[in-house]
Image (tube, rainbow, N blue to C red; front, top):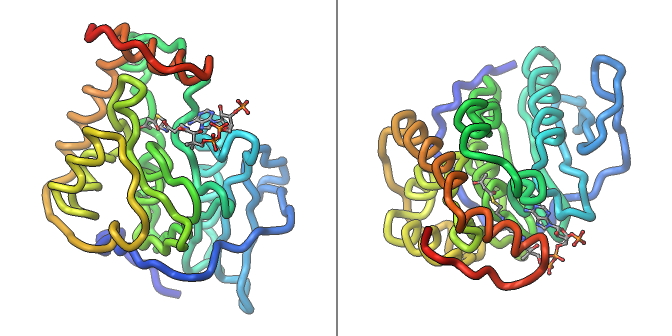
Length: 251
Ligand code: CAA
């Protein structure tokens, strides 16, 4: 079985097939239950570790519990000599609609900075086996970032990638500002991050860019935490939860 380093370039390939829905197999390797994901070994030889994000009512919003479960499943697939590659997928409607805004709504700057909020998500990018994101529907904010942490992205025709954090008064906080430039080029990345506009699979596939990642990610994380000290970030997330248009005051 090959163990691959995670230096493979990001690929965005449109494909016609939607990620397949799974029947529930929710036991984790320790025997406990997963609440937010479905995990199983697939393929003829059962050598593909399969993780399906499974919070359909919240469009697979990446709450803390869900990302901890993903980390746990990745740990167990990494340690399993029978698994050669890992697939992370969602549903036809949503790969993931981002970090959980309802969970973040009342967080403070101190909590985010002190607890290094979202740092543990990076586990997805350090797994020592190839990880494939099978994306359809919304891959927004943290959902787009989660896909970009994977080595390869297979995107269905209904996939929509976006970093709409600006509409919530914040910025991407899980590598989006850094990996998006590599995936789609600086110009389109800037447009997406500054407008919150979404792009489809064909557009996402077109250009690639190389920068150093670790320092950029560190800086991004601190700037993301800093938005939790602003009134506009609180207003943006509260407006989303209250289903109204945000009224930003630039402070
Ligand atoms: N967090 C929490 N709940 C979310 C969510 C999120 N990111 N995205 C969707 N939901 C919930 C909605 O609140 C709604 O729940 P209720 O039924 O309880 O009201 C349910 O999922 C369905 O959503 P909508 O009714 O909004 O569905 P829609 O089809 O009208 O719109 C959507 C779909 C365009 C994806 C819209 O839900 C949306 O804009 N979601 C937020 C996307 C976003 O801003 N993502 C970035 C989050 S911040 C982030 O990720 C930071 C980071 O870098 C890590």
